Image: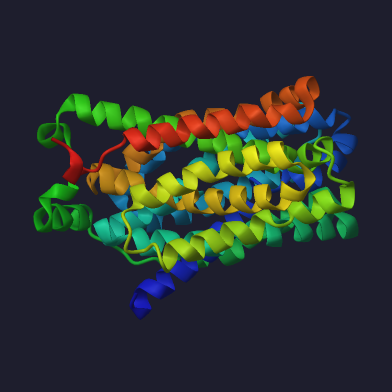
Length: 395
């Protein structure tokens, strides 16, 4: 990676860390005080967050098309203002209606400002060589919760949740906006045309691979993304509780849960190092099996395997985050990457919105046995990954 590429990855990685910390990881720290101040229940605040995820699912394909057409620089820079407006709206909300509208606006920002948009921006710039850059920004953003949770908690404790939202809004304007403006300009279509001309095999379209194969691949990939996002979000929302109902003491459960973040980063470092020359489909298959293997070990052995479960889940989730960017690239090529990525992630966003509620119901009903549910889902995702074939493997 040359110096210019490294600067782009660093700028986009920091901006992504800020975007995730101020949206996806925001309600965990502020929901309780927000609900108390607005006179609503805490689940209602999370309902607003679910609304944001639904909006981002619906608008994701449009955001991808805009990046395909204009590049990441103008879209991500403009989106910094949308993030700031949504967070300011949240800070100014006086009741549930205002809060819901603010979350909806944040959903617009999330559609054009989280990983899918960043991946599309990198593919627009670097074509089929974007894999290393995609991995690089996930290494930065892997620390979003590490940065976001304590900062939000400290701001809320010192000045209240409204001030915390205003600070995050200001950071989007003062930090993320300048960083997004440092992204290279790219003439529309130049990267795509060059990549397609240099390597026609990277442009897997219905004309070259057949509409049936393309549709089958897209359906399998969308299913994998939906299942893995469901599991990831369910664990993010309920992991400490899940560990406790399986017999892990509270203090130990918090320690085990804390292993997920470092394991995610370790998985991404492994992808960036040892696995960078391995086909992304192979690394995705290995990662896709990790949650189920860890869950089965935890169910069979009990408390002593709790740490094994959380580490395997975290490492697998870390690699699969990268796979969400690299698999569409290697299976479909550069052309229309952003729009296709947005479409592939629509089911995943809906699954993500429903995940905390559905897995919470499973925990209430079945206790620790709910882990069989996520293990089975992980096995189905692994099976779908085994059914996928790259261009060179197709008959």
